[in-house]
Image (cartoon, rainbow, N blue to C red; front, top):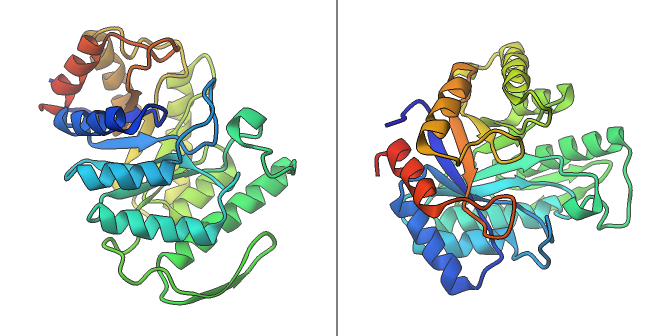
Length: 287
């Protein structure tokens, strides 16, 4: 049994609700530490895509122990005030089981990067992301908030009272210097999404860099969950339980504490043998 990492699963909000409901329940039965949804309007050959926040609320209502969250939500089409309100609602429905994965979001149309009809420069995108996270943090921690920024403003907004968690944890996907610094200031977790043909070396270097950012901020990085998003490299995570164990062990040595795999999606690059997938889950979680 692999206990070197906590195992999470990414679900696909594209099937009819009765089928999705059973998937949520099965994910909990398999002992996954968390079930996550990508937050998009359309993505990777599927449009439309069910709203992540509405889907999380539904999933929260029919489960009792599994944590749930977005992997990741971004400012691409979500503004801070309604996002904070939705976060509060799901936190309450779930009894405090929501984790908010946050990232700057992709720049391309298929990642909702230009759905507002605006193409931001890299600096503008980074500035906008930092402001979004800062505003969201304030709205979920302070009783009444008034804010004025370059991209958003708020006047006497009251959202935080009634949260089950003091503030749902932010797990921030930040691989560049500014994103890592933002994670060190506001994040309770960090998300790695390797993009090169040497993913283990990439993640190893990133863990060291983000760890230094936490140290610079006077925070203990050893207590921070570090989630690896799999499925976008050539690594055979779902080929067999032994292949998974080997990879999970290697990444655990690199500083990863949590690993997210995809629920098998037939007809896509994320298809996998369901019996192998379930054996990986039960061996890792002990369910």
